[in-house]
Length: 253
Image 1 (cartoon, rainbow, N blue to C red):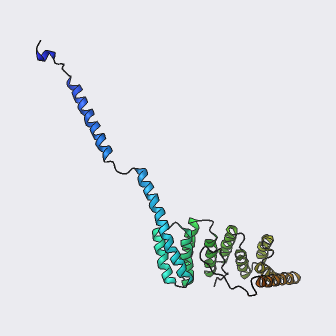
Image 2 (tube, rainbow, N blue to C red; image 1 turned 120 degrees about the vertical axis):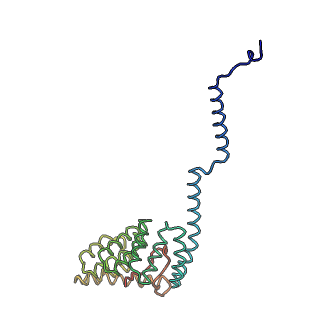
C-alpha cells in the first residue's frame, strides 16, 4: 500500500469550513482584547461627571450668594453664571439669578429665571414668591396673587406669603376676595401680628369697626410681646440667602 493510499483525504469543503471558523475565532479573541467602553460604561461616566460638576458648581453659587448679600451684584452674577455653566439643574441657582435681575431692573429676565426654577422644582416656594414680586412690578396683580398663594401652599407656615397675596388683592380693590382668603387661613395664623394687622386694616376699609379695633389691638399686643421677648428691641427686616426660610419683607416696588 502506497503512502497516498494510507493518507486520509479530507474533502475541500471541510477544509474551507475549518479555515473560516478559525479566522472567526481569532477575530473574536482579538476584538475582546481591544474593545472600547460599553454603552453602560459611558452612561455611568456621564452620571459621575454630572455629579462632580454639581458639587463644583456649589462653590460658585456660595460665592455668588455671598456677593449678592454684600450688594456686589456684578460679582454675584459672574459667580452665578459660572455655577450655571457647570450645572444648570439646580432651581436655587435660577432663583438667585432672578433676584439679581429684580435688583438691577431686568424684570423680564427675572420672570424667565423664576419660570426656569419652577420647571426644575415645582415645589420651591422661593421661586413662586419672588416670581410674584416680579409679576407685581410688571403690573400683573392677578397672576402675582396666584403665585403668592402657590408659594404659601409650599410654605404653609410662612405668613409673609399670605400677607403679600392679600395686600395685592386689597390694592386691586378685591376686598371680598381678600377677606375670603384671610378667613381660609385664619386658624393657621391666629397669633400672627402681621396677619392680624392686615385683617384689621381690611375690616376698617369695609367699615367693620368693632372687628377692626379688636384685630388691631391684638396685633399691637402680640407685636409688643414679641419685641420684649426678643430682648426689648424690635428686629429689623431679615434678609437671607435664597434658601434662608423666606424671611423677606414684601417689597414689590
